[in-house]
Each structure stands twice: as structure tokens, then as C-alpha cells.
Amino acid sequence: MRTFFQFMMRYRGAKQYKAESELAEWMFRDHAFPKHATSYHEISSYLEWNSPFPNALQLFDRLWEDYQEVED
Image 1 (spheres, rainbow, N blue to C red):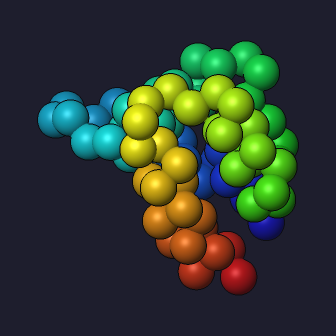
Image 2: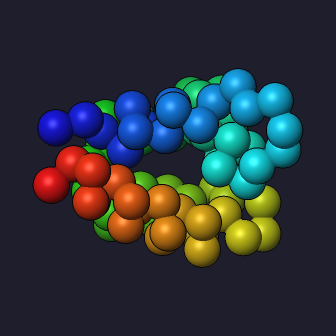
């Protein structure tokens, strides 16, 4: 099973702005982000304290659902 971080790396490097790409770039550059996590709670808690932009938590929730569909 891939980690959520690995799943998100598919969104890096977009030529046009997308919120998914912004979150992926931030995750890549944040050395403290729990890159090995596969737990919703662990990643969600981290984002609650370190959210990079206002709607990051809502975006995370949506992307987590996509992650679960792909990885389950």
C-alpha cells in the first residue's frame, strides 16, 4: 500500500494552478510532514496545526476519499 504522500506526488508539477498541486508541493517541501503515514487521523491532525492555506483540510478530505478508492 502506498502512503498518502506517495499518492499525492502525482499532483506535483502541474503547469496550471490546481489546489491539489499546491498541497502536493507543500507536502513535498515540508520536512516535518508525516510522509510515511497511512492513517487519516495522523495526517488530518498534522494539517489542522500546519495548514498551508485556508481550504487545505477540505481538500485533504476529498483527496483522502480518492486515496482510499485507489489503495483499497
